[in-house]
Image 1 (cartoon, rainbow, N blue to C red):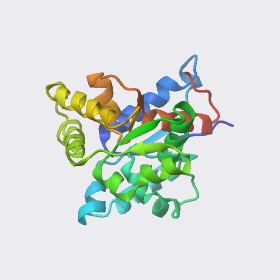
Image 2: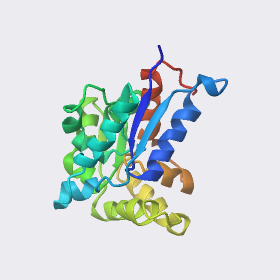
Image 3: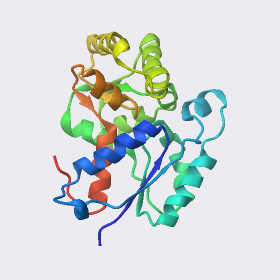
Image 4: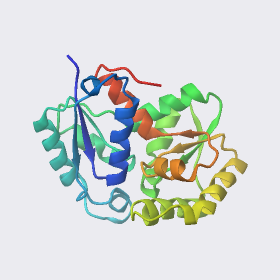
Length: 234
């Protein structure tokens, strides 16, 4: 029997939509009935995860748990979260349910090891994710070399994520910032870029600078499709 997916979303809403689209477009299907049943709780009331981690902002777990309970009631067989930083809170959430979460950090690190052996990936993520070492630890566990943005590069990333994508503002006026950010990281030794915030695949697809990129949202979609017993359309 095929399984179903629960998307614990709202972190942010556009990233949630991006994940849903990727699951649908990446599933090998000949008609509507060949697709996976997906339940979505796009809970935009979940407090900001970086603020909670770095500056004592509101704990996001109660609202995340509210969405989780809704997805459980729907009958989801697995839970996925289109927010990399939110995975800092995953151990707390997983302890509250028997429904398995699929971990975006783990599947992304394995993909980096498979596609770019011996290469160095630049981790592009929120300040909260970097401060907790989420990706650093996941990559190290797979033997993947990495580097992280410096202070100014990180400021640019947070501007793109929070001031533009999350604010639903156009990206093209800031295209030079994205181009210069990637160029600077290449000069420091980056062979490829890990889009470790779910807003960043939107930036990369909109501004279309040269990568190569690893898109954790796509990796999470692949893992969820396979978990449910369906084939991935490559």
